[in-house]
Image (cartoon, rainbow, N blue to C red; front, top):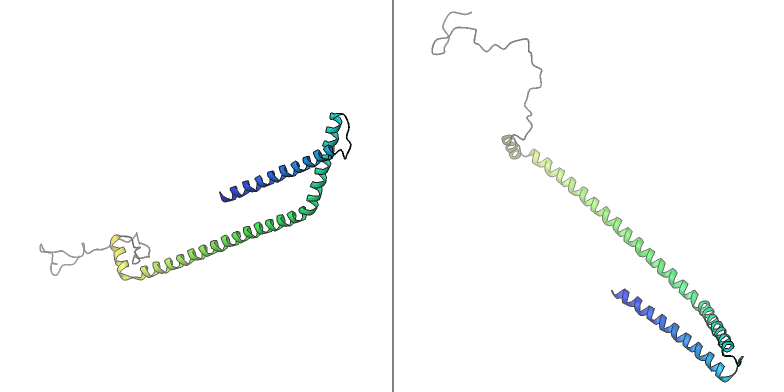
Length: 174
């Protein structure tokens, strides 16, 4: 908002300066005509063309002198302004890269801390017991040998006769 207002004020000053400059040159042309100092003719058309060309010539010369004197300073200000903009842009990019690198390092640090905490939790016997109760723990005591399907298991059913109370009868073996 403030920059827009400043730009409008600058534009207004430029327009007022141009109007003032043209008014001064027109006044000079009228003064020269009224004093009869330069090419005065009886024809209004000839006088208007002559003084229009004279006013245009004066404005052209004034613009050329202005450009010659002021253009160098304007170019230097433009170059300095562009350099400042580029430096500001580079600083912002550098700050953004630095902040991004900081965030990445912080994320890596948090990942390492999280991994350490998980390792400590896995070693805690209370956590292991809880996981075992919940059925979330991997069973580590499962036998890893292969089964023998050709040989049947003998669970003692056919070895000896039993009494009605479940004890073995004496003396007889099968």
